[in-house]
Length: 322
Image (cartoon, rainbow, N blue to C red; front, top):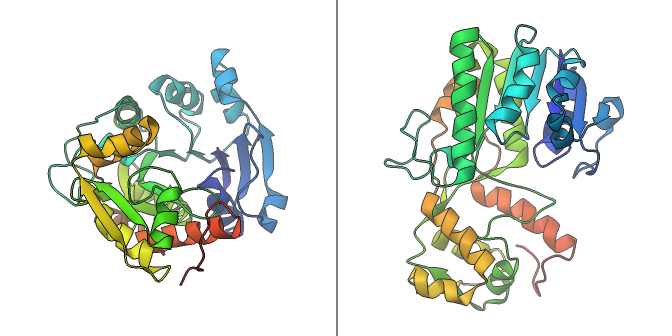
């Protein structure tokens, strides 16, 4: 199958593109050409690379047309954030495409009323990003209903893995949180540390896309959560991370309004966003319809990221990971 992947060298694409090549597909990757894949792989030697600045091409109305020139049987869009961007891509493909896969986000849910949340649960997006992603989903499913456009949407959680910082037990990206846990220093968490995070390894997200392609008959017109088997509480996450360094987590808890004074404004904003959402998503639908079987738990996915960060000197610890 001829497959075009938009954003195929990023977090997900680093794992997805080699998976597609190994399955015998003819793969074209469209990207700005500014990023190398996080992992080397011989599969990249057989990938056609096209450098396109999506934003610039969309300004002149040419992006979707140029994607259609690759004559794809399937398109996987990992980098779409507005309805207009999605519309410009999909209109030239309408009637000439076997399968369109869009990367959504758990943020379309906003807060959940029942957990683990299922895909059909009413949505309450809390931020502009979540509202924009939900609008894209609604547009694509309307296209499926009215024009039989063959779409599948996958909603990843907090993507992590070797090559970048994972969301930490305090709900932001400052690596000092892991260094405190590794050294046995006190870590202050907001509230009672019972809000949740739901990580997923980038390779498991790649698996989700591949499985949706393979199981098109049951995936078309559907959305799927693509996360690990279980979410983590902030407290449980911190305790596990400390244990990897042979330490017991020394945790202190403060009401959020007091806690946010202990971190930067940027960190407080990120934490508030994650706590307000507290993602905790079910993967039962993905397991049944597309045979999704995540290889990594949330902790195992973060562990892989930490292992890389330590080796790269981006996080310091006197003790190695257990």
